[in-house]
Length: 402
Image (cartoon, helix red, strand yellow):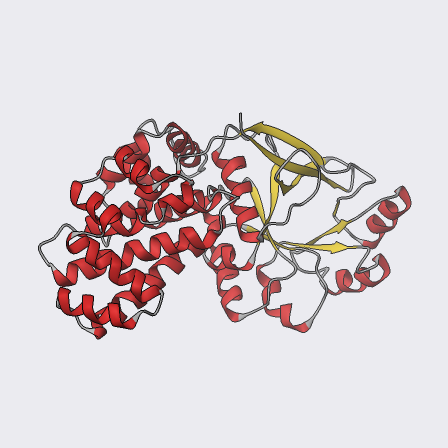
């Protein structure tokens, strides 16, 4: 049985009444933060705690969630109900114009924003009109220094939270200084929670990535894929039904997809895909898989306009399954329902699909003699190859960064 883990630490008000919890990603029962990219940690935490079994982690309270830079730029917080979370801007986020624009968009949409482990500096001044909460780690910015900043902003809507409060004396001093909320070992150490984790299969996620990559999303195809995967089905319906914007519960995938719309559907699939990358496999294998998929799809449509370009996509996507799943490719290919022309391309590099795959692999390895020979055979130009490669690289990066 697989489990997901999250640590939660209470956040209390001036009367020591519970406001909510800060949610902290954990990859096991030990209460320590693992060595993992912040983007991936946030994706897993959100996927499991908000798309998973229930909101038992926070109940009717508010979840305070750390969001790294790129997830804010990609508006990932908008996947989640605005009344259930406070969006914490991680302290290592650079105060760029790009980030400011993202914060403004989230503010307009009604999300509450917090600056985590804040250290005052002029670069953050433009952000303050859109911030609801500032968190001071009183081990880094002592109470007597934080109070000066609090007093300067006392006529604004911004509230303040003291982190790392470890004694009653510190709690009393912070309250007298004007802090509104408090968090630290004086109240409670982070509590580790374990729950059953539900993960969609990699191949299902691959199919969904393909379905949402089309210029016009095929909602019937998306519905078909989701409806046969109990994990994705459950997470999708929980996600949609958690929205405060709907007046009645959604009971069918068709309703759910219609409600989501294309942009939010793509974000949902991308987040779940990132969260389900196998931890023992290098992430570049997944990026390379979808890059190959898009390249093969684009080149196939150029060299054979009447072809089913999805065959190109599947050929590229499945070309690394042996490395990803640690099984011989011939065994994998026989176990998945793909056309014989795709199987021949994957196993023996035969046919036009096999030539396109071989060409891309040669392109990867800078084997220009082979690239030239296969280009001539396919009747394509170096400009076509460069165009396909650039488009597929951009598409893969956007999909992986969402």
